Length: 194
Ligand SMILES: O=C(CO)[C@@H](O)[C@H](O)[C@H](O)[C@H](O)COP(=O)(O)O
Ligand SMILES: [Zn+2]
Image (tube, rainbow, N blue to C red):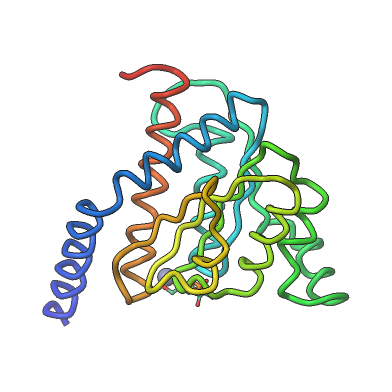
């Protein structure tokens, strides 16, 4: 069993090493998009399924509350958390619309959608990106594998941060690191380097 544990650690380290070689320019661009939106009075909406729902909430709470330093609250909404809304949309319409319907109500031009999917193929996240574009929002997509359907929806104003890996758990582990990089870059850009 300890060999399995050491194997997981080794695979995670290897994925992160590979990601560190490829992802910095994309993460920098994602942070710039978010900083521009926040400076312009916009907010960040987040979504994803399963572990990625947790990641979406992790990021929004770090904006709303704090990351590593004292600073004013920043505007973000996780679209995964209102169980009455999510269950009623899934029940009355379809699970694929649980995020897109909220975006049509809450999203404004200048806001950002943080869309998280390891496969890039979750239909509700794909529809969220389509709804965000209809609302003139910019999209930051965290993906993996081959980017899936989400990759084909990314415009030149958007950015896709695609983890170079095929195992869902490894991709999620890098997504969390990317989220913490984004929090750090946002804090440094808005409130100065520490
Ligand atoms: O956390 C895990 C697996 O590590 C799962 O809960 C996983 O997030 C779920 O199977 C998701 O539905 C996968 O969706 P996606 O990443 O392909 O969009
Ligand atoms: Zn997981």
